[in-house]
Image: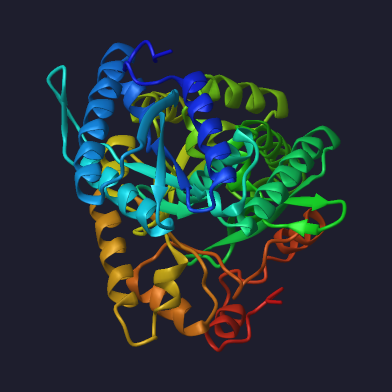
Length: 458
């Protein structure tokens, strides 16, 4: 019972070997075993970029290298029973028997991860791979193979959630968190059907005029028992499960509808742009451009009133597809901005390839203005870069009058943050648009610069 691609034991054979290890450990207390599951990092992106045939050959090369590494490990640690198998897809598993304790399994995991760091030459392509590893040890007291596999998978998921090439040892608290996550996932699916999501709006202020130039639409989940949840509490789960597409669509429809209502009510005094966050997974959807065009048509909103925001740290699996989507939308007037600029490794790449209209300076830099480190110089460099490229700059997370005055002096066009307003509901946003509390007149400018221009700070 071998895997057809790699020749390794397949899942069925491996489960049989694992069952034997469990029974052996039950008979003898000194027979401790460990199960490792290796999940390749970002293998789907490799598969998409190089094609399934090349990706399969890469999997074969990875299997061979893991086998060689395990043979070397056996020679060092004198482990006579060590089985490598392919569970399926981009996951491999290792059964280590007769180990002393969890530290033996950790050392093997580290060796396997180290082996994968060397480049693979496949079909003329040099590919760098890494893998996260989840580990469980028989000291937990297992009786069923499915429990061993489940706990190792839970540990693997925890490792992947923390980043690439990490290793996690299972403990019962992880199982509790996994159950809580599953409960939240069920609640999230129900929330989509029950329309439990609300959209709040945070104003973006033009420093030239002091007027509200736009709003950022921010999703909130009205959870039936946990109250109002912020995006940080459910968006990562939505992205992992694919539900971000449905939630993103709901937010796009509602924010475009609301912007259209403001244009009708306030006319020339309405905000110029509605900024809506879009995830990397949404951008990978080939139908996103058509969906947005349909939403604009359905809500009657001019395309030039919509601006998409893409977080710099978002993983875009197919940059080429994202580029085509954004160019198509830009051709009808939709703009886009690169959010949290300067915090990830993709800043310049995305600016160059995807041609952003705006960059948003991350709040972590703004918060360090006046703190004695290089926050001001970082913002100065970002503003200078954007100006040279003809790109607008918005500073996020403005909370003090000192930050505001420094951003004005640097030539930053727009700002947002709690100094002006927290995200608010439609009624409060209506009031802000009508009153324009930061408009460019002498009295208001003096109030802002003297530190008395705050509104909705708490």
